[in-house]
Image (cartoon, rainbow, N blue to C red; front, side, top):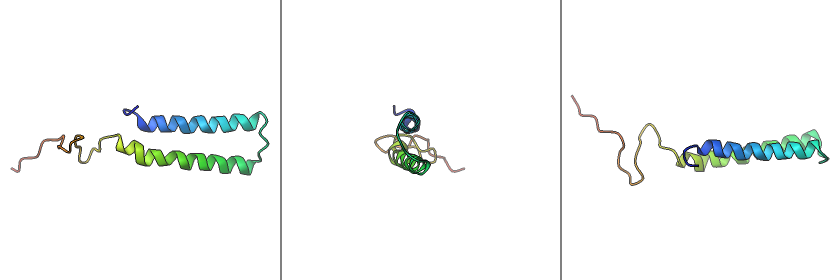
Amino acid sequence: MTREPVAVVNGVTALVEATISFAVAFGLKWGPEQVGATMAVVVAVGNLPKTWWARSQVTPVDDPRSNDGRRLVAERIPS
């Protein structure tokens, strides 16, 4: 799960959206405005974990460090 955290969050968001769409198609009496507003909230709430949790699970490429703070790239030796 930590190798593709953004994919996991996107999958959950897509599942919620599909469930809402399925419910509307088969009996939930919502108008287009309610469906649109609900989908917008689902997407917005789904983006919060992508921003906070998922980014904490990946190594930044500009300054990669291990869990204990050691650099993962060798220091450059000045020439």
